[in-house]
Amino acid sequence: MSKQNIIIYTTGGFCDVMACSALFTNGDLTDDCNLIFVVNSVDRNVSFLEKTKANIKRLTDNDNVKIENVYDYCHDDDIKTLDSDLIKSSFKDVSKVYLYAESSGLRIDAFFRAFKDAEYIVYEEGMLGYCADIFHNSELGGLKLISKYYSTRYFDKLSPQSLRQVPFNVCSYDRQAIKLAFSKIDDVSPGSINQQDNISVMVVSAPLWRMGPLSYSDVLVEHLNVITSLLSTGATVYFKDHPRPEAKLYSQIRSLLDDNDRENFIDVSDVAMLAETIVDVLSPDAVVGFGSTVLFNSPHFYGVPAFRTSTEFVAYSLGARRQHVLNCALKCQYLPHIDELLEVLHTDCDNKKDMVKHTFDQFIEQTEESLDNQAINNVYEGMFVKNIPVSNDLKLIRNILYKGELPTAKASFLSQLYRTGYLRKLKIQLENIFQVKIMKQDTFKDIKKKLDSNDKTIEHLINVISKSD
Image 1 (cartoon, rainbow, N blue to C red):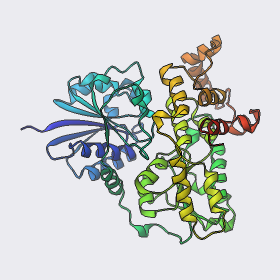
Image 2: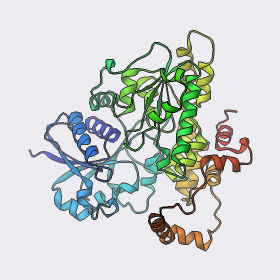
Image 3: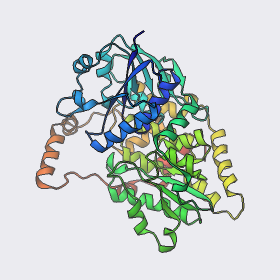
């Protein structure tokens, strides 16, 4: 019997872990299958692609696995031009296609058009909301081809939001397969980390300036505030920078700390590419972050409590992109705020570690199933059922989170022109020519000044909705 040809579309790193976990759980990680990984290599980043190739071979335990760059099937290195005819002619007799449930920007519709007779299996990264944007995108016509959807049901309460309307056969990853994949992707030994004896917190950074109107300095200051607040409790803080080369913050934060604090601020960024791998080896007493998937994976897979930072800051940094705001709402509902962690760490007692764990567990116990949560229902209804268009506006984001809907007033003629792209392209061209920023958006600090009062921030609105006041 001939081997099955299986295509796996991935973006590397964490995505490779989930893809291989889905392959294993579905029984396709065997010698009876020809695995063809098609990698979105972040704008043809050579070093990223090489590391991804090494990771895939390690995860599949197969040196003969075929690994392709998706940009080889695009025109002018533009993912929007991913050519379905070129894909179809390059890969014959494809029986299954594994697709990453991230966003329509990856052009998964090209695979639907190329292999109409294949079985499609969707695997989710775990960030809890990206999938919804795919399954409600009018450009995609291949939903009927999807046979299975692999995801993680966090804390036995948090289900994929796409299940509200799309009747997929939902499958759970093999839990041990995911943990094994995390241990395989990076070869880490406990001795590679300078571990301290006192209570410890691992902070996972986020390059929030890349996604919205915040500046690098805004994000740096917010990270610094989180770090100093934790260090003030006497805890050791382990810091994990984002793996993107341009997203490093550790050295800048360290230079701004007092001399006495620096010895308790330890960089673990180079220990492993994925934060989950470090959590597994380090076993910190808590994880703190701005929006990383590790905030859910850490407590779910490793029993390490996780706490979130300012919701308003993250929401504004992302803008009002539908899937990001949905994720923001989900994070608010299912992760306790860092203030609850700080309150425990400032207490004078000998069992802080147990108290941190109890604080997290109690928070999760008091939350409800995600598909029954009215706050999340409101957000989902407004953005994915009514399909109300959104823009990068903090007031609109607040309205989404509070009411689940947006005002439908018509935009001005100038705004409509700008949204179509003509003025936006002209603006970018002029900025490149004159090396200046035109129509610079407000920084987070400026936005804060414009808010009427603290009781009208996103943080407060979420607390009202979730009845946590």
